[in-house]
Length: 86
Length: 193
Length: 223
Image (tube, rainbow over all chains, first blue to last red; front, top):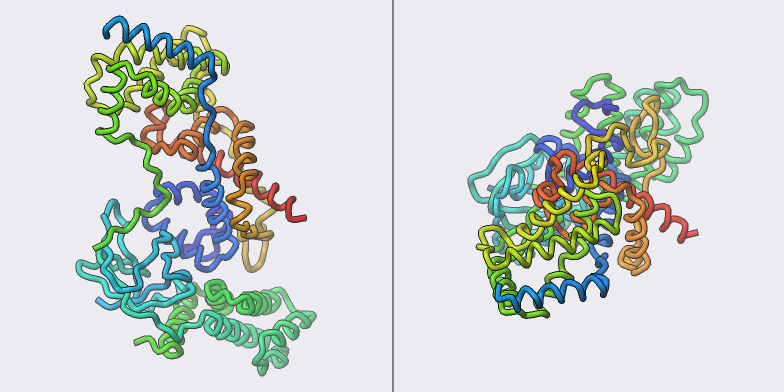
């Protein structure tokens, strides 16, 4: 839904384009409208902050490492390749 | 060029979260893409960007003029506008919104018109009864602005005043006019050149 | 003079050419530690990418193993024109793709195809309706700021890991490569064979779901 003032976005719209904003994919005029909205809307400032917090926490996930059997298999392959003089 | 810039507490850019060097060192952007430079604004655009701290800044040419901002590749902080107080601005905007509501209410607005305290304003506005939808809307804005001013949230209080002006005057031009009033208020109250 | 960091969260994902050279030389010398370090470094992401093409986790693991054999075979002739990582994932994607074809998997890319239904990031009841006199489309129940300690807590990170596992596969793939592994969009699109627009939609949905789950969880803890 569009805001009543044509140059403004609603909170509903902001939530929809927040990823484009964070990824730097919004065209300049939309980005300006987005940032102006943040100045007058505490709810959306908090929402954006929550998105950033989510990314911060997600970045701290360290993923699983190689299971031992797979690792041993690869090591065997590596040794035989190296021995073969490649 | 001398311009102004609002920053979050600690001289932090509100959108980039960049920490500005307070010692006035020049900062340069790598200009990766359009809009990725340093932003500041003229006095007339200050109401759109309010935040915790107000700084006077210097931008070096070339400077790009955009609708409510100026963009440059190099800039530095000159000095903090110490008198800037978001809460005072928010309160002024709340009473402006009250004035707009009073205009809409006519005689029924009398109880609100002389109030000088936000809590009193809220109590009085909330106790009004039997208003038609338009007047209810106008009083609604006054209440919203007062609540936001009590929280010290200048961005939303000032925006509410501008939206209320549009509702009262029935034209979008009123938004810009209210923002102009706000810019004048900022310049006068906080001794911005 | 002092450079400004670019606007948004920008994770360095690519490998440095001198590091690549060092690793290649170590591998050619038969250095097992270097090899295992490389395998460990990319294991999780390789599984993610492989999973996008094949039907099961077990098959994805086989594909990753196969890819490593291909990588070892090609090591002698790798010229370093691309980064080591791009080269590794190029081989992996080829293995995964042909295995996917062999499995005659009819829907390898359907989870990446343009999603039909609109997935809403936030429940519509959180916003005021178009009939609201003053603030149509604005927050009815605005979100509340999370405490920093909660955000950085180990349980939060673990919770997010669990939520990622619950995501639809395509969303899981994209959010892991972007936000866990730190790949940029171009690298993800190349590895998964999807468009930038597609990648962004998937990323948006994944992040929105995780944020919403985190909001529910942190809200519950408060009570």
